[in-house]
Image 1 (cartoon, rainbow, N blue to C red):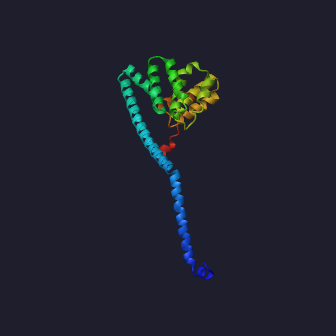
Image 2 (cartoon, rainbow, N blue to C red):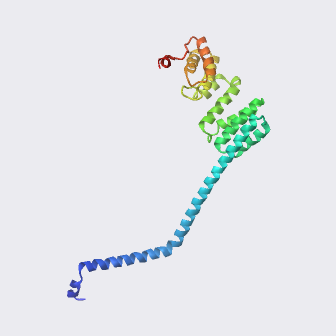
Image 3 (tube, one colour):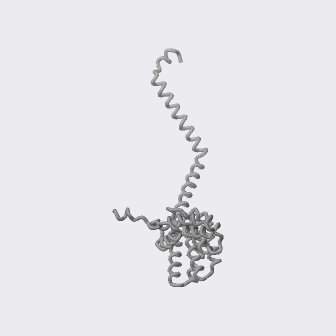
Length: 239
């Protein structure tokens, strides 16, 4: 090609030529890539679809299992109300063995009540301690088990042990403030520490969230220790 012919090729023609070459090169690269990795991409896509399908199936089975456990627990409650203790215990044992953490905790707490009613305190304490120590169980279940366990053991525990165990729950605002606070306050009295027991009794008596039976007892104890434990209802009267 001489100089005049080279000059006859316009810049736009060069651009078109380069673009066509580039596109052809891309097609060849894509074809080679697909020949080399295509089957693996298809296999990966199939595995992804299978994995997603398996996840949906697992989720469905989990939902069905939760429904089965809920029905089993409801049936156990019906047996308890009908005083069919053996049938209820069998169902509760199944939930304890195979149930999810929530159902397992409820089953153990219910079984503990049955055992306590039967005077089998040692077995009941084992069930309660299992819930209290179960890190997979929700905190309200664990706290409830700890309160029940301490209540059963209260007369045999040292006051220091009761205080150490329940002090985190014996605070205003905690759902178990009444039950835990009362046992902690009594333990302070056993240790001859009325200066710590009195204010705690008074706080329990004035807390509107505490059950009335506990509030009444705490009010009487606070008064006997020389503290005013009458709830302030002035605000409510004004309203």
